[in-house]
Length: 362
Ligand code: G6P
Image: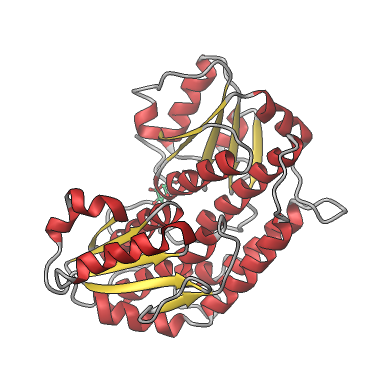
């Protein structure tokens, strides 16, 4: 049960929370399904979205990374222009707003000080807000006009895992509900596609030994590590790099494949670990070109691709899911790799140094 906060037989909360992800996705499908099996949300929230001419997502840390994926969903599924802002920046530098903005706060805890401060500013300006959170009675939930819950169960490990995938799943549901409400035709049955994702996550969890091997092969003695991807894979790379730095203290960065040549490639040395995601058909050849460029400079590359896009030499092949939903599954190997890298390096996985689960003061 996802709401059981005991570690049970798991050595760490993080491992337990990684492996709860298939159940969380199924729980979200259940919670957001109508009697016909279609995804649905409160009609008053739908009408609030439909009055907006632009969405502003505001969040911090991992929740910000989920927001980057959410932007793609709102734009690609529901055709609503969307911006994503770091809460700590937004407070002191409010962007030029559209005529009818709607604000979406994403926060696992609902207590992050920077996000709360941003919401205070939004309310001062008289605008409406929706909070997407895991904690029903949290401050951000109480202060916003509307709340959408993650139903992920308590997340205890400081490094966020299941909340990230829950946020992405809920964002996909909201975007798809908006799409349908606007009569935009697209051949997607989201509840069904999310069920496929849950099964794929389970399959990936069954391969955790492989990720432990990758972690020891690539990261046991690494000083730094790069994650590269394009489009949605790039967003996931930012989260993969954050996970790794948070718990293993390896200096890790996520880069857009195409930007390597504009600077980051200067950092590549003999044996630099480069983990590449290749789940997007339209950039599959491009990202593989980027991998060749780093391998030519003696990087040690590890390609994680997806069924249908795989090529020889790929280190792990994810089960196929809908191309918009790949972040839900491609992040799982990265979570495991970070977990095992931290474990092998003797780090305190659940309580990394200098970090707090929820940063409630600025
Ligand atoms: C802290 C946590 C992160 C989290 C961030 C935002 O930095 O260590 O894991 O992503 O806060 O938290 P929130 O609760 O607002 O999602």
